[in-house]
Length: 433
Image 1: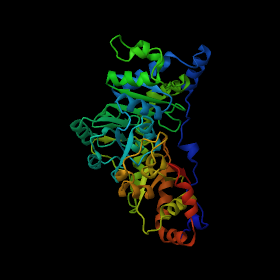
Image 2 (image 1 turned 60 degrees about the vertical axis):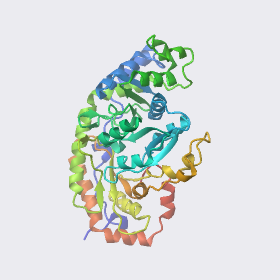
Image 3 (image 1 turned 135 degrees about the vertical axis):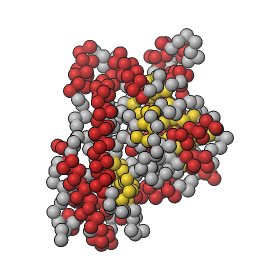
Image 4 (image 1 turned 90 degrees about the vertical axis):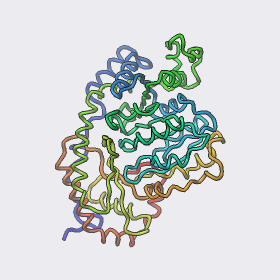
């Protein structure tokens, strides 16, 4: 009988992920474009930025695109654009990266946290309605891990209540819902182009919208250089001298890196999807792990492979020890820290401006599904960027080996105290083991 690597046995995965399943972050085309910008001296501003913004907005299916220095500033610009003002409430999932929420308090708004659906990991439309008040201004949805939210239900709620919808598409470049690209369904879509994303720029972001007013407000906030170019009838052109106080301009080099890979985004997404389906099918017979599900009509992109672990015990370290067993077998896996934002001091204590927390009766919302997700969600595997069936097969073998030895995993957990290790990870959004 084979022995778990966790207990001294041989590890299952012998193939090299970095060599077999990854692509260069910077393409040769991207390097050439950056070199051209340097030779031209276009190291602060460049016509390439506007070209990429238009190309990306056309790809998504919107009229306007606005590049930003990161995804966080894209979201802040979007919230400003739709009119979030001091003390306005914005409904947002707690199960997300903190940068989905901090732009709300940057606008002196109040984040109101709501539940997610445990199968899709996306914001729960039914719980959105529970949190709407006369002070609600917007809903900020997150297409988490590249999985489209239930946009029909969300837009129905928003339109009935005259609420704006901002889409955080930071994981979801090229994902679609019922034939429409995410980012084009709500009022404003926001993307991160950070170096680990599927359209990487190093650091960068982009905002897309069909609304001229939202585009102009967003541009006026962070791109003073664009304001003089607004049409003469724009109410924001009067701010040509100063803009509105922020500078969110993307670096041209970053725009070049993203632009160089846009034409290959769909083909790469399709290959990642094929690999992910092979991986999911191979693990489908393991009853205590559950992959993220798609809504009907959703076409996710597999930016990440997140699963839920279904614990056998009430021990809070069980998920962590299961991951340690996988890691010992040679699988790069990770512990997820999403789902804790509704308890973070930054939000419950009023934020840096002292005016961004909800009333006392709402300061510690009960989000049992989210809290369960925070304890049991895990990164099941890194992104499969190439045709790498033999590697995926080894990962499957490793999972099945651990599944066959779960009594040993539980015994190992009971014999060791990992509480301090787990505590050190709980403050991170994603912690690779």
